[in-house]
Amino acid sequence: MIAAVYGPKAGTRKNENPEKACIEVIWKPKTGQSGKSEREYEMTLQSICLLNVHPNTTTSIVIQVVNDDGALLPCAINAACAALVDAGTPLKHLAVAICCCMAENGQILLDPSKIEEQKVKAFVYLVFLNSIVSILPEGGKSMEHGILTSVTHGVMAVDDYFSCLKLGRPAASELSDFIRNCFKSKAGNDPSKAA
Image (cartoon, rainbow, N blue to C red; front, side, top):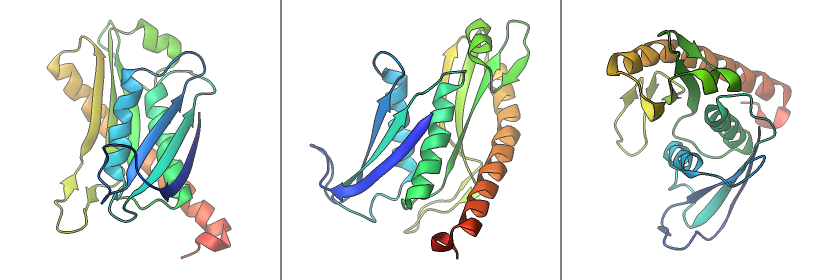
């Protein structure tokens, strides 16, 4: 997965609010066309960006699929968030995405391979806030342990879904810590990003 951010550049797409920035996601699959599920994640990426900092501009996020070994859309969200941070795009908070699968025997798998993903009865993509508490500007509400996006595929009981959430939150927290440490070490090695 390769993700790149271009912008902000002047102007927004047709029918967009000129008082806010526009975030467009360009999904480039390895083969074929992008589908509906890939477009759903555009809203997730828009929701983490501060859209009033650069009004009447468009920022493009290009996601190129190089290889699909499972959990493709969570991987795309994580790559896009890293690219947004690296580009210096103003964000409300970061997002961390994971995939949980429910096997036929009731076992829950985290971060399944493509083969495991194809054999399970259901799976869910979960996108959490990177931090425990995220404060939005201009008197916005704080969100604790927020889920930004949840997309399920297949038949899953409500209890199984909540079991996936229960396992997904700590996994997302560990991934969040890893991402945060990567950003800190990159900032420590780059004099232009030093605080």
